Length: 274
Image (cartoon, rainbow, N blue to C red):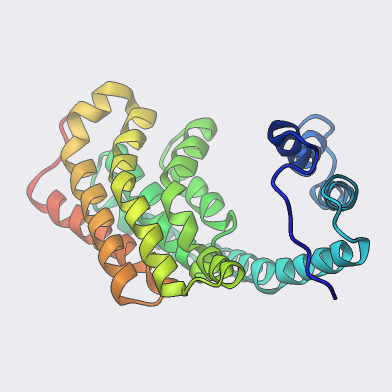
């Protein structure tokens, strides 16, 4: 089959081409959010729109577009759906067996301050789950944990979504990194190191953002030492892990290191107002 080279602006305007390329995503969001269509049907409609955009707007051969869509569907099932499904089954087993309650009790013993626990759960623990599962499962699991701590649904969702931001590139055993390496031909270890250089510069700020979300400026003023310890240790260990370990293991190291550093700090210091 002849190779297809995509052009950046097939419609003559980069802005117009980008807006047309957004149609599949907008279709899914509109069907889910405005019309409350079931997710699988919204996804099917999004695929149809994506094929139409690829064929008629970007002039991709129809056979090649269908083949790419089929490959995407298979990749969506294995490993993406398989990883998420097994993660949810494991979570349900921990709930049914009572081990989830044990885990929550273990977190509760770390500190009586829900803001400190929010950093541990939404940032460090969520990053660990992102490394193992990814694709939304860590957000759902950690969101439930924050609800159990007394967070409102809105605040729990926002805290976890922000806390999980920089763990995503290495999610699900670094599936995004490995996929990017396959598509670009860049060595996976090299790409992993390059990503860590970008994420490490900003990721240490996330715990500070979580404090603002959870308790505003008061939370930032009272709990900032913990945010600094957890965030900086996460950033440094991410940078080091990306240069010494396989991409699939990178997320696990900063998640565990930042959690350990935070726990060690709480042994000698507790936030004011806790």
